Amino acid sequence: MSLSDPHDGAGDPGTPDGAELYGSGPWMVIESTGPLACELTSRAVAQCEDRGVRHEVVGIDKLNVEEVGVFHGMVVTVPDQPSTTSEIKSLVDLARAMRYYRAIRRDGIDAVLSGRLPEYRTGVLQIAGRSRVLNYHRFKQLERSVCREHRIDLKSTLDEVDFFSVYAPGATLTVVQSQIERNHIAAWELLLQWGITDVEAVAAVRVVFEECIQFYEDPKFTALFRPVLDSGLNRLQYVLFEPTFPGPIDAEDLEGSRKRWMEAGARVARHVLAKLNELDPAITRPTARRGRGLQDDLFALYATIETVMRTPEFKAILFPSELPTEEGPTPPTASVYE
Image 1: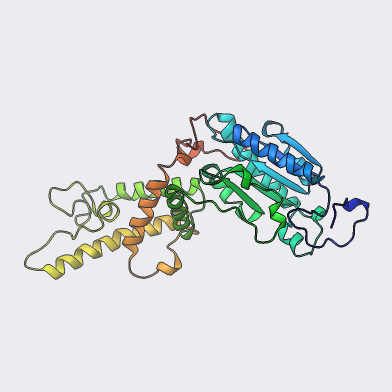
Image 2 (image 1 turned 180 degrees about the horizontal axis):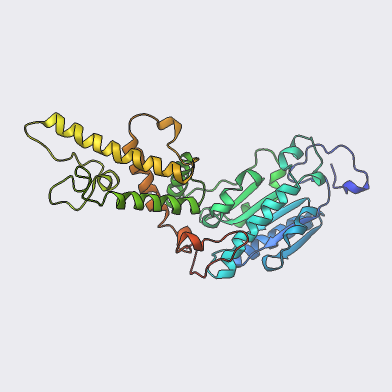
């Protein structure tokens, strides 16, 4: 099948492959900052020209979100390494543009490949750049809206990036993930199981944990304030920091002392769970984990939050109130992704 303009009365949409495309655009290519973003933009342009697909390149600083809906395809390149305030804000702008685009053009590549709709009636949305930037939480939230991600890492090259391979069923760009990326993905999978969906929620949950710790810093809790002689930890801190500690041992009542220790841990754990649910009813213990093991689950959740909050994603966020919003300003910062 040869390229044809749908507005010139083309026929059955068929199923295009990587070399042939029903329709002739237009595509929008959004160019971000950095050498890699520039190369990806050039590659997208060259591939459009090779196939006679009309295209328009727009710099991220010139992007008008309300205009993206007229394009049949949109290729989004992301900044190589967001470091300035404007570059970090551009991440929010790109996410907003992608969300708006999918709201206008609700059908993506699946509708084309199935033959249900011609290409010019859909919105083929692709995003390309460094994996560490594509892992930005706003992009992760839009994964279902994206037809294909092109992740560029040490084990991938630009030669593998074909923006028209999306029209070939089963074609993928395989990239070996680093251990850091695998850990990052696993951490967010656990957080999502708890109903914690973004960095703002992570920061808020962290505050709940700290408030609960302080709640038990009160001598009135005779069994929970300092349950271990000469220790500066309260019972909740043992749950979160020293979960394998067996507790104070009463040589004359080994079984009873162990039972009292675990019951005290269960008590503070239930308190934390209730406070998390007060913060947001959607934040609750994963269904598959209901029953015993709440203390272990809270330990895993707290450890994961502590880990996530030390990632570069949080280095641009000093306080939850300063988090970038889609309408508000982005705080001045060093680097989001290093």
